[in-house]
Image (tube, rainbow, N blue to C red; front, side, top):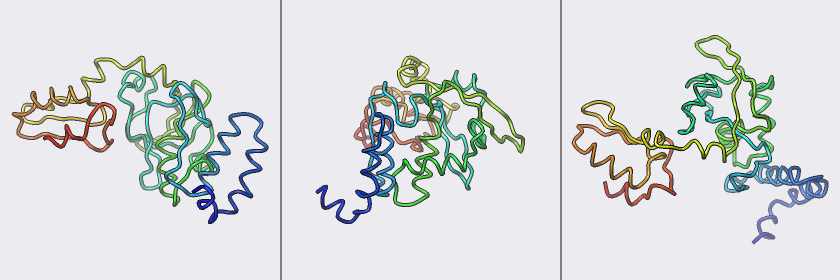
Length: 231
C-alpha cells in the first residue's frame, strides 16, 4: 500500500527524504513529517503526541481557539477550563488577531501551511487558525488585536496540557448545561458526559425549548452517540 501510495507522488520521495536525512534532532524530524503531510495535500494525515509531550510547533498553547471569518482571524471559542485564564489575559470573543510577537497573521499562515496537510488552501487555513496559532515555546506572547475598530496589545499566556488538566473541576460540569430562564434550557455536547446528560434532561424536560449546542462537536470519550439518539 505504501508503494502504491507514493507511485503517484514520486516527487515527494525525492524532495522529502533529504529533509529527514538532514534532521539534526527529533524536532526537525517531526517537522519533516508534517512538511511531508503538507506536500501530499492529504487532510487525513496526522501526527499524534502524548498530551504531556510537545508538538513540533510548541509545547504550550493559548487556551482559546481562532477561526477564519471573512479572511480575518477571530477569537471564537475558549477552552472550558479557561474561564479564569480568559479574565487574566483580557481577550474577548470577536477580537480580530493582527499579529503574534510582531509577526503578522498573514506571515504566520504562510509559515504554518508547510506543516499542514489538506487538499486546498481553505482547509489548511482552518486547521492552522484552530490549532497551530495557539502553539509556541514561550510561556507568554504579545499579541495585537482589533476590537471595536481599535488596536489593543495584550499578553496571552500559554499552558501545557498537564497544567490545564489540573484546572478541570465542578465548574466545568456546571457549564456543560444550564437553565437560561424558566422556559429555555441549554446543553453543550462537547463538555457534557453521559451521566450529566441524563441529569440535564431530567432537569430540563419540562422546558418549552431546549438548545443543544452542536457547534463544537461532542466528546466521544464522555458522551455516547447512542445517548443523544435516545432523545
